[in-house]
Length: 352
Ligand code: ASP
Image (cartoon, rainbow, N blue to C red; front, side, top):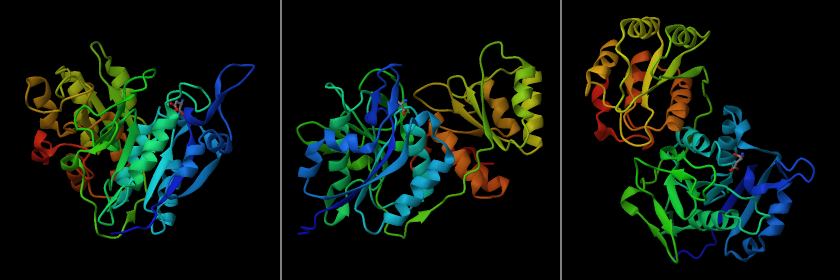
């Protein structure tokens, strides 16, 4: 039996969990991390070695950006051999984007990276932050036969552990703020923490490979009934643009109007990657199922299957950053790289 105390690194980036109310303006603003540890004396009673790294300037996660993702990935890389797991305290607004980005950046991950935060600041009596943080640390430290039980980038929120790149923040008020509509929860915390072993990815016994090249030259074209061609053209003609997410209806459907399709065709012919992601919270893009999506398939739009919007953003930045050939980019987008999409939904079959 392995009796070694697990070592966990807690990285505090900011978010509501560490905020307090400004007396005058009444708006929430980030405070120094020390206030947070003062408020959770229970942390000291854990049978583990807990180290903390706090951002000098805690951030509201609405200011999150790829440079910070690189900073986080490097922090994990630098501490990887010393630590058994990582917990990242992060605002919930963009937590699903950060979790998705880290899942792509950390190839061959064999240890848990759990993101958590809260809807109410730690100083408030009904805070959800305390339970979220304590259970996230507990999950990150779980080992079986000397190996991490959860070797994945996850989000833990309100008693549920989710695969990070499958999550979406769907509620700005409920304690249950996240959803993983297309993939089962990885664990549920009650009196005991129950792990859904079948849904958890196997750890990679290979060396961790950290990717830090991300290309943010992407945009999103969310269609709606009545969308005008000049608006579509303006997005497609954005300078330096390499790829767009086409946010479509239902199972990947879009208007069949010739002018609209011609604009997309021209953009693809000029080298733009178009990634079809559904506006629906659950379900999958299936290009060709309806007449309204077969055109898209024909002109070379890449189907995103059941990928979330957040994971699609992170995946595009990651894949474009790898300097691959067009054909390889299309293949990477159609296949699951880190469990972010279910290939059974037919995406892989769409590779041209
Ligand atoms: N605006 C906050 C943030 O994302 C909300 C939260 O932490 O839940 O940083």
